[in-house]
Length: 379
Ligand code: GDP
Ligand code: MN
Image (cartoon, rainbow, N blue to C red; front, side, top):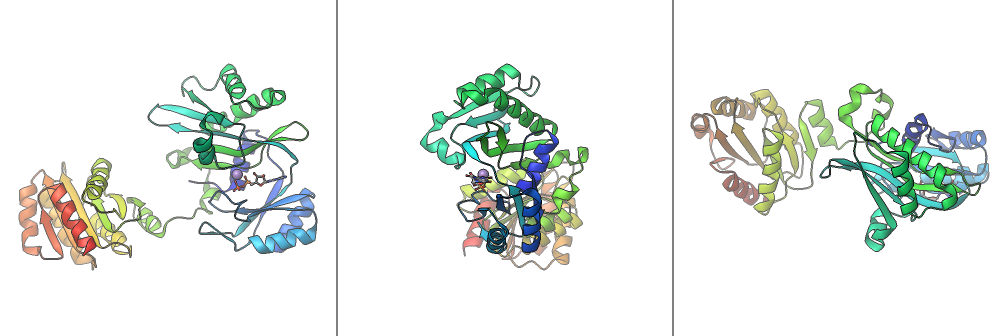
C-alpha cells in the first residue's frame, strides 16, 4: 500500500530520520491552527497519492495566517493528476541549501536491494535518469549483509554530495535502509533529501510503499483508511479474488497466477488489450467463478471475456459445471470465450457443448481463444 507524504514522514520518524514538525488537516481553519502550532513560515502541502505536487500548485509557502488561509483554500479540492486533494499537511518550512535524491527499492532480477542517490534532487528522478544518468549513484545491497557503514560512505562519495555532510548523510541513509527493510517497505524514497542552511540533512518529502504481504507483522490500520483503490479492485478484494485492473477491453479469468499472466501475453499477441489480471486460484468452483464474472461484468470497458482454465487437481467437468452454474447466477453483458484444457478437459467441454452460442464460445487452444476474444472485443 502507498502512504501519503505525511504518513511516510511519520513512518520515517519511527526510525529516527529527521523530518519537519507538521500536522495533517482537512479544512482551512484547522490549517491555520496547525500553522500557528508549528510556527511560521510553513509549507502547505496537498496530500495525494501522486508526485509532482509542487508543479501542480499543491505545495505553497506561507508566512502568516492570511497566506495559509489562501493556500489552504486553493489546494483543498485541487485535482492533481486525477487525485482530488482532501488532506493538507502543514509543516514548518525549511531553509534549503541543496536538494538531493535518495531511495531504496527491490531489484527483483538482481535479487538485491537497490539504493539510488543523486546530488540532482528535487526534480523527477526519471528525468535525471534520461538527461544525466551518471548523476545517479547506484548500489546493490545483499539483504543478508545489509548496508554497511563503509558501503554507505563510498556511495555518498560517489554521488558527489557536499563533502561537509558526508557523515550525516551516511547516518540518514543507513536509517532509511533500516526503515525500508525492518519497516517492510517495497519503496522508500526521499525527494528532495535536503541539506538545510544550518548544514543538517533532512527528509523534505516522503514516498513509501509498504509490502501488503507483511501487514500481519504491523499495525497499518490507520494507513489503510486513506488508500484509494480502483473500484474494480475493491470489489474483487472483497470477494477474495486476486485482481489487478488494467486499461483494455478483454476481461480475463484464469486459474493460477502464471496462467493468468500468460493469458495477458497471448491477448496482447492477438492484438488485444487486457482489461484486468484475475487469478481465481486452483478451485474454480461456481461461487468463485460467479464472483469473478460479476467483477468483470461491472467493468464498463469490458467488451469480451476470456476464461482460460487449465484443469489440474480440479477436473475439467468440475470447472465446466462451475462455469455453467455461474452463468445462471450472473447476467453477463459481454460475449465469453472459454478455453478449457488439462485433466478431464474433454468431459468438461462436452458439458459446455449444449450451452454454446454466439455469446458463449469454446476454443481448444489458448491462442485461438485469445484471437476470438480480441475479435469480439473489437466488433
Ligand atoms: P512534490 O512536488 O510532490 O515532489 O513535493 P515536494 O514535497 O518534493 O515539494 C516540492 C518542492 O517544494 C521541493 O522540491 C522544494 O523545492 C519545495 N519545498 C517543499 N518544502 C519546502 C520547504 O520547507 N522550504 C522550501 N524553501 N521549499 C520547500
Ligand atoms: Mn518530492
